Each structure stands twice: as C-alpha cells, then as structure tokens.
Image 1 (cartoon, helix red, strand yellow):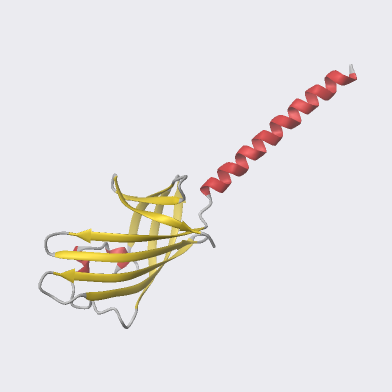
Image 2 (image 1 turned 30 degrees about the vertical axis):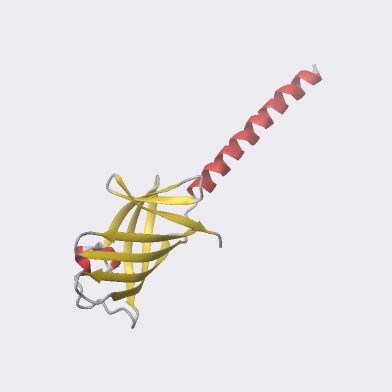
Length: 159
C-alpha cells in the first residue's frame, strides 16, 4: 500500500515541478530587460537616412540612442545625434511607449531639416507616444513592427 502512495505523491510532485518550470520559462520569455542595436536605412528618390538605433529596455523605462546622418539630394549631409528616454508597458509583445525626455546633442545639425517627414514624433520630442510590436526571434534578434510590416530587426546585446 505504501509504494502506491509514493507513486501518487511522486507524480504529483513531478507535475508541480513541470508547472513551475513552465511558469518560469514563460516569465523569462516575457522579461522586458533587454538591449539591442539596429542599423536602419530609409531611402527614397530625394533622401537617404542612415541611423544606428540602440535600445535599452529596463523595468517600465527605456532609453534609445539615435545616431546617424541624413542626406538630401543636392545638399550637404546632416548629422543626427539624440537620446530619447521613455516609459513603456508591454502587453503580449505590444509595446506602448511614451517619450519622457529627448536630448539633442550639439553635433546634431538637423534643426532646419524636416525630420517629421521621415521619423515619428516619438523620436523628435518629449511627451509623444508610439506603439510597436516587438517580437524576440530565436536568432537573437528582435523584430520591431509598426503596422503589419517589419520596420527593422534589432540585434540583442548582452549586458
């Protein structure tokens, strides 16, 4: 009689252990603490924008470094260099982000360039919102989506 009870208790403990392992794996999958870097290039017949975007997501807050240049046909190249601090919340890989502070570095000479023609307001001034779906890939990249199209891939950086 005793061995049957041990089997039942053993199976019960095994089930509890498997459920705990599953919960831990799901929590790790949804963990928002990550960093990644992307090279984003936008090109049309008049303008080419080449940006390095470095994202850092912590617990409910984040940081984004944007550095690069914009070349407009027939004009000199302009440097973009700014830092964006933001708060966010994540619901099933849907990130709702709100820029809290945007810092423009002295070497950013885009004051006379209509950046709002190329970048969402979130990247340009504080107090603006953006919604993105961010999906982790087994390759170690995050795909950032705005609308249904992949906007860019961001390579994970180990911290």
